[in-house]
Amino acid sequence: MSKLFLIPTPIGNLEDITLRAIRILKEADVLLAEDTRTSKVLLNHLGIDKKLLAHHQHNEHHSAPEVIRMLKAGQTVAMMSDAGTPGISDPGFLLVREAVKEGIDVECLPGPTAFVPALVMSGLPCDRFHFEGFLPQKKGRQTRLKELALLDVTIVLYESPHRILKTLEQLAEFLGGERKASVSRELTKLHEETLRGTLTELATHFKNTEPRGEMVVVVGG
Image (cartoon, rainbow, N blue to C red; front, top):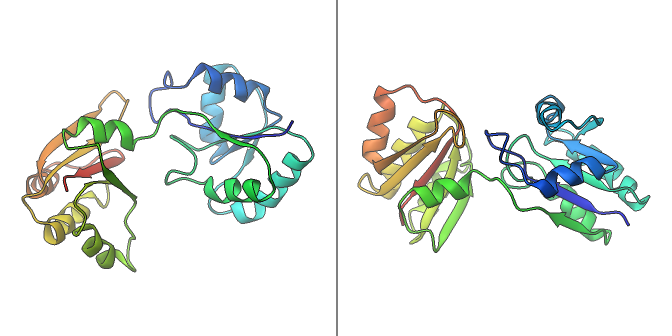
C-alpha cells in the first residue's frame, strides 16, 4: 500500500540518522530531495544507490501533483530535506496537505531538527515555547517583533550568519536588551557552540566576532 514518508536527515553529523530511516530510504520506490546534490552525499555515505527527484520551495507547486499521482498509483515515496525534518522551515507542508486531502497515508519519522537541541541546551525554560522559525526579512518584520514581545514563553528562531547581528539588535530593541537568550551554531558539527547571555551581550559578541554557520536563537519569555 502506498505511503508518504517524511525522513528527517542529519543537520551535520551523518551518524544522526535512525536505522528505520535507512531501511525506508532503501525500500521506497521514489526518493524526493530538497537538493539532490546534498542528499546524494548522504545516500552515498549510507551505501544507497537510487535516483533522486527534486522537490523544493521553487518547484513544489508543480511537483506535488506528480508525486500524488505516484502515490495513488501505489508507489511508496520518501521525502528528505537538506537537513532536519521536512516541513520545519523546509519544504514538506504542501505535499503533506495534498496527500491528506487525497486520503493517502502519511508518516513522519522522528529524528533531527535543529531547534530542539538548541532549546534544551539554552538553559531557558523549555516546558512551553513558541517556535517562530525565520523572521520575515522585510515586510511584516517589525509587526512580528512587536507580537513576539508580548509572549510570555521561550521563543525559538532560526537565523543566518549574515543577519544574526541585525536580528539580535532588533530583538533587544523590541523585547528588551536584558532578556536572557542563547545562540547555538554549527549544531552536531565539529565547531558546535552555544553562547548564553542577554540579547545585548550576544549582539556585542557578534559585533566583535565574525558569525559563522546557521544559527538557532532562543530567547527567554
